[in-house]
Length: 398
Image (cartoon, rainbow, N blue to C red; front, top):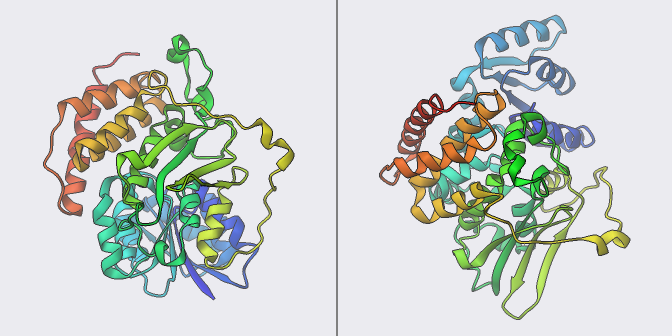
């Protein structure tokens, strides 16, 4: 029996994982769950799986959950706050941890699980983006294997041999005969939207992704394509790739998730319908593969696949992310923090869609920090950047 912790069980990745587990209860036992504040869904998950532990970020949410579970005869121990979440992340009984907490809040819990030598199924791209080589060094030191859940990185990961999978962050693509990795992106909901109308984009429109079912924050990141920029950074770290070995193309149908070009002129591509259950299932059951209820590709429709280069005029945040990586780790942390604040401000109606890049670029240009050497320095850069970003946003008017 495989014992599983889900950090972020009520989010889109958590719910997708739950749907897989429900069909494989003979193989997987959910040992602990962590969520933000969705008490009702967490209650349903606890009553369904009866985990030993559950944790909520907020104390009030935890108290409500505890009462609801007791009323239904559920003995799950309910924790709260950062310390409660850290306690769950450190559990020795667990085999695998789904790291799906949105934003920088997922950083420390993920590191705690890595330090326990767990298999980490990581969907929290902010953790990889902000900690980069430090995370990979910790994984190597503590014998923790990283499985990327992003469909693009999972696609490349699946192409690697079993031994190469154990060397994430320390690969030599040249030695593997790989000349280039290509990440695909749909272009989001505004691929063909007139640029002159971008100021009219509302949060509802930005969250209406044409292919993927995702949370609000990542949906907006997809609309600006900073999400793809962060995935570029992830690929640079995970596959130890140079800037010449990673490129991005727009593929509106989201059928091909990544391609690998080899030095002999051949190419491998990974195809599947856009469904996050596929990379999640692969990571949970690896090296085995078990059936999941997803629709198969109709090969007769593959003639309609299209590709185009991304426009930095349409997606300036994509270029910001690529350039930030070349500037150094501290610039990436700054961009991630500024983007979290700007996207949250957009979703809450404080700024316009076009202000997101304005905030991100302004903060990048006007902040400078030493390169981080540990988790504390990463978090310090993040904290200071958030303060500066919030102050700048106050000067903007709708």
